[in-house]
Image: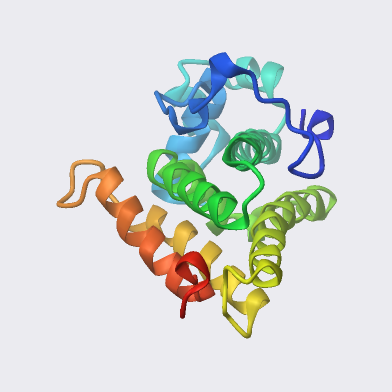
Length: 221
């Protein structure tokens, strides 16, 4: 799955018929056991949820659940792997579609991160809060996925500084702050709240550009 993706951003294949699809979100397409686990983990936490409860939510017997996923840990890992696969793919496609200018790539990856954490709130929330619950054998893999996402933002910010588009003296710190801001919307944003998605994205893009010291047309930040 993730191994089949390109490690960088320049080699992602963008087909004309798929342009902009990274912005499209419907209901998350999860296998029934994973959807049941997600709902339970989001409400009660990993350690507060039993396998029996997940099975009941999935309308399965416990042996029936184990036929698909042999443990509660495998449910958490399966859920987080799908979450990161979706996030990384959307980010890579957004950057590839944006072209070569760092500022356009920056706007694209920020928008992609914001949309993901707005429309996949429960998955993002579980991914952030349940790292402590992962077995050591998978934890390093999951952290590697997160680091890969952060590197996408880092590389764009450093490129923007080199090109003279961004004036920040602290590109790595600014990049981390931008990513943290995007991830944070999953803790409070509601689709039926006072801000709609596009308005929130516009506001946060303005904030993100300020963090990196965006220079419009080479002017002062």
